[in-house]
Length: 146
Figure 1 (cartoon, rainbow, N blue to C red):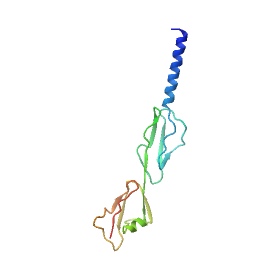
Figure 2: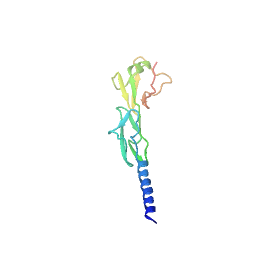
Figure 3: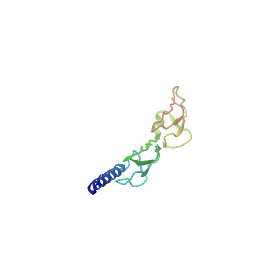
Figure 4: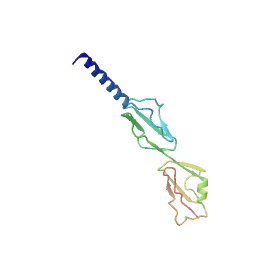
């Protein structure tokens, strides 16, 4: 092999390894609704870099809080599950009140249970859901009293 051939092989090999390195890098981690990374994001991340997420108050993180840069792509980012906002208006509409709490408005995280009872003078409606209701991603199946 001549020196010229060796130089061409070296140039091709150098281009290949630099290209491979570029492919492995990631841009900024993906944004998520109602949450963010716990540190400032960078414009570029090396392969193997990790970033951690957290959700806003009352939102519940679903999935891994940590994403990793692999082959130029981030692993699956988490989601932030919406809390339930229980208001006096919604309870009055169904003739119910909190069983153990005296509050005008309560925020309940996904998965949390809240107990209700009928307002004095009202009785459980025939097809009412249970009085112990679970918040599911921003929704509650309210019990009803008539």
